Image 1 (cartoon, rainbow, N blue to C red):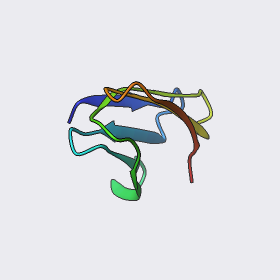
Image 2 (cartoon, rainbow, N blue to C red; image 1 turned 90 degrees about the horizontal axis):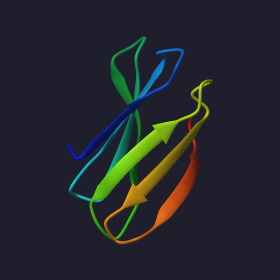
Image 3 (cartoon, helix red, strand yellow; image 1 turned 135 degrees about the vertical axis):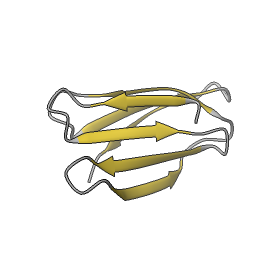
Image 4 (cartoon, rainbow, N blue to C red; image 1 turned 90 degrees about the vertical axis):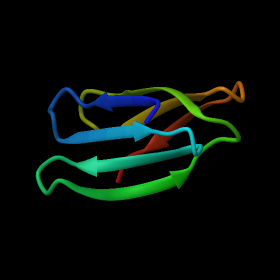
Amino acid sequence: MTAVAVSANLQVLASGGADNTIRVWNQATAKESDIVLAHGGPVSALGINAAGTQLLSASEDGGVKLWRCR
């Protein structure tokens, strides 16, 4: 795991990995709700908006992406 972010309402947690993926977790169920092969390099930073509906990711490949959380 290379990056972690939690929404302000504590309902969504996201983790980024050296395997270039982002995993989104539902805090209420403690289950993975989504996994995305997000970047061409390790995920270096994550941020989630207060409502837990959008995720921003950055990678060592130089890319920055905005995602919609499910």
